[in-house]
Amino acid sequence: MTATKGLEGIVATTSSISSIIDGVLTYRGIDIDDLAEHASFEETAYLLWYGKLPTQSELDGLNRQLGEYAAIPAQVLEQLKLYPKDTNSMAALRTAVSSLALYDPSANDMSPEANLNKAIKLQAQLPTIVAAFAHIREGREPVAPKAGVSIAHNFLYMLTGQEPDEVAVKALDQALVLHADHELNASTFAARVTVATLSDIYSGVTSAIGALKGPLHGGANEAVMVMLEEIGSIANVESVINQKLANREKIMGFGHRVYKNGDPRAKHLQKMSRELGKLTGNMELYEMSVKIEELVTGQKGLKPNVDFYSASVYTTLKIARDLFTPIFAISRVSGWTAHILEQYENNRLIRPRAEYVGPVNQKVKPIAERG
Ligand code: ACO
Image 1 (tube, protein in one colour):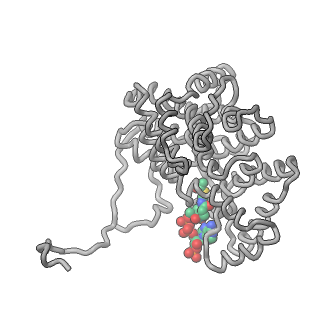
Image 2 (tube, rainbow, N blue to C red):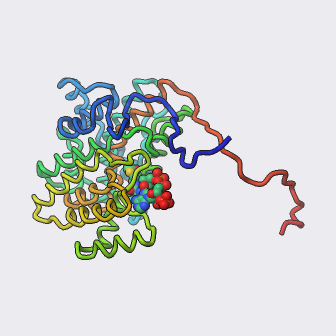
């Protein structure tokens, strides 16, 4: 038995949800470029769950359900108020999602209908949790979700308490489409491993949020912003990046386990970053990002991934840096739950082996003889 570090290149399951073939990402066989231009996030989530794009009446039905489920249980809201104010926003989300299960009478109902319904509930409630915690930690009362608007609109509304402008809603909606699913990424794999024990969907999503939090995965979008802030201005880009490369530091937002010739999502976020920069009259973050890309791609051959231009996009939308990864979760919960439903449909326990490299033939020494 020989281990493959990081399971690189290992095909661990079959799936009909999303594919990465020759650098092209599809959801249910539709190119992400097509979806990013022509589908809303709600249509995309429907596609991931049901395997086809919705008709208008199916979409209306989904939107109604999302509106009905968006409020979170009062107990979960009260718990958010007890978290230390400096709680990491992904830790808060992970804990709150875990406690949603305690107040859902159907939490352990394993019928396919109940699980699909819980997937929609989770999709509706994650944005509410993230926005509520953003207010609570500042000592403010959360803004209740409103019905009849998209998830992107509702999230920005709950975050600011004001009607968001159309450009911001459109940009966030497209970012949500681009982040919705990504084959067997680390957090989706974590979700599938958890539910393959026949544990419940809330446990699967809680595991996934824990996996997404790390800076080698979803946490990279926040880490990109930390780097942009550290660099400070376009004049410093060259010296800071060259120093990091000379120190063999990782440049956040670059590189990918699967894409070696570029992440197909990055170009959409780059375009969005440029357009939002132009609209707001502040191109500095965009220009700094372009300069970083030139240096990192030029010297290391590494291309930006989905997280790189997300940082300037979300900052231009006036979203706090530590909400970037929770926004990723708000989108990816559609993919996680689609994968969880698929895992339940054709389940087998996921239990690989480890190549043992520790000592052999050891004996228990009496405690007094142990040095
Ligand atoms: N900056 C500098 N060097 C890098 C970077 C980077 N961002 N990414 C990879 N490399 C280098 C590594 O140092 C290594 O070099 P070496 O062979 O000389 O030691 C080589 O490229 C291979 O890198 P690995 O880390 O082994 O590649 P792996 O496939 O394991 O990792 C990962 C992929 C984690 C995404 C990596 O590229 C990385 O850490 N990137 C920065 C974090 C990031 O942006 N994560 C988000 C990924 S997208 C997502 O999850 C949503």
